[in-house]
Structures are given as C-alpha cells and as structure tokens.
Image 1 (cartoon, one colour):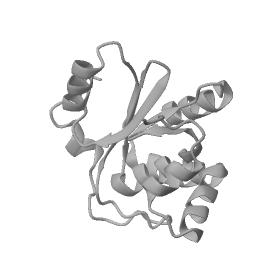
Image 2 (cartoon, rainbow, N blue to C red):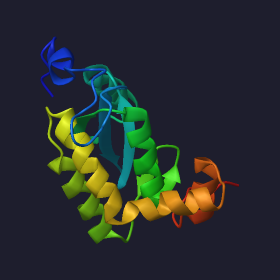
Image 3 (spheres, one colour):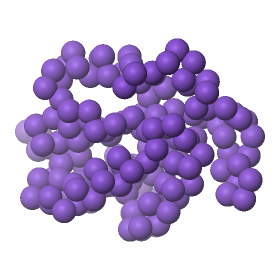
Length: 163
C-alpha cells in the first residue's frame, strides 16, 4: 500500500463529528487488516499500516496481505468482527476456515469490498455486514455473559489444540 505521508489525516477528516443520518461517531480511527499465512487469516487493527505490514513480514515472510481498510470506532469494529467469526477462531487474532472454502471466500470478498479511502462508507457498510449473520454471536455472547476469549474457546470448532 503506497500511503502518502498525509493520507491518514486526509482519510480521517472530520474526526470528532457525528456522521449525519447514521449517527456513527467519527472517533477512534484506524485500519482493519487481514493477512493470510498457511491457510489461516490474521484479522487485526492498526493505526499505522506501513509499520504493521513491515512488522508482519518479519515474522511471516510468506504472508499474503488481503488488505487494510479504514474505519471509525476501530476498537469496537475489530471486536465485533472477532465475535462474528467466533466459529472460525483459531488463536489470538487468527482464524481458520479449513474445510470452509465458501465462508473464507465470503469473508475475503466482503472484506476486500470495503473501500481503501472512505472510513465513513466502510463504517456504515460494516453495520449491514454485521447484520448478515454475525450479530447473532454478539447476542449469544451477551446472553451467556461471557468475555470474548471464553466465548471463542466455547464456540470455536477449529481452535488451536494445547497440550
């Protein structure tokens, strides 16, 4: 990603202002990212894309970047995405879609459809994406009164086995 020095300031303009109609607060700006390595996806957040990519390449030299996408409310957005993908949780920020090619394709297609330069549009579209089957996991986690790590350990069918 060739990021201009002022790209972050340009993309995240109007910080602190509530988005009309949708009432999305323009706070906590950042990027969701997805990288793939050995059939698994690492889904996380960052505020510095170049630095994150450089660091990832040091510990995952063969990784494939799926993308960096800008959002408002990045901490909450990442958490909702991790909850929505609980059944595919492997460990930490890693998710495995092994044997679930359709779901992996669904995730990658939807993630790459987010814009590279419009956190307003992405933040609104994320609301719709969450309502497309992922929100039920948030409701269930709340119903069970569980933390995200406990919920992931309980609901994931592909989590890393520990001895």
